[in-house]
Length: 400
Ligand SMILES: [Zn+2]
Image (cartoon, rainbow, N blue to C red; front, side, top):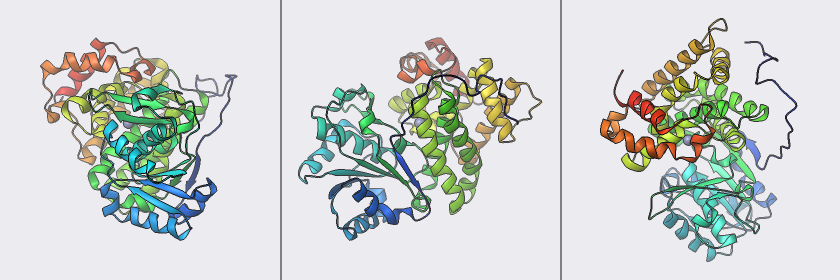
């Protein structure tokens, strides 16, 4: 579709002050550069934060060996858990304190990178995770962080937020500070080949959701749209290919880069109602984040398409990906996009309806109430109240 310079998405005179916080290094086998890149941050003694799956895949040992070969001392914390809790972060801090480290490397999925960021907050600024819940609460400098994602998913490597769950209340706390952002994101598609199929599916859908939610939020800007559009372009083409051919290195690269640009878009535009609706499903039914987001996303696209500006944004990317025709009404193009998302969920082997996770109609009011109180809900293009979320959950509850 030719660019429409008269649309709301055209470059305008909105003031801009953009300082990327994260250097992005991308390339097959770029992991070989980890020692040189860590040293460029002034590192001599690093903490490598990762999980057992990454150790078992051989990545942690390889990264450690590369760092040692570059003359660095390495201490490892390998006990990262999925959806890291305050307790997980505290254990990581204990290991870091004993090693007098001067840099942190997060290696793995979003959980490893979030734990690394959480550890950085407490190690350098003291206190507890809840002290950093919100934005910009760290007053002292933080250690340089190098983030190495092994999934094409969260985009945490390009964000200044750590998502840490309170061990006691189970509340997911978004702790953000510009200083917490990784100084370098090292993106090597070869590292993502080891992802289990389910992780590929969940993290890939999540990356796609990040591209689509950031595309339409109230906070979107001409700048954030650059990243949302490019993230969508890469992920919409890459996801079916990595699902069908896990060894497809080119498509793995698209997903990894797409996820990083989607993370950059979040940093500049925030998220929307699919993430608000997903969090209560994770909290109450233990649904994996990407799976929960995936179930809600097509319904949120349909809801948001009632907003003419959002509908045009969806139509633009749907046409660019040849999911719709430029001659179609934007609402119709958005419906094609929602249908395509449903077909991708099917291809990924992910559930499309909430009954799969055990949710029942009587759970809807409580879920909707919690979703409406999520931070991300306020950035959705359409105002979403608890009764809107009730309708969203009801639509997602059972097969159409
Ligand atoms: Zn997400």
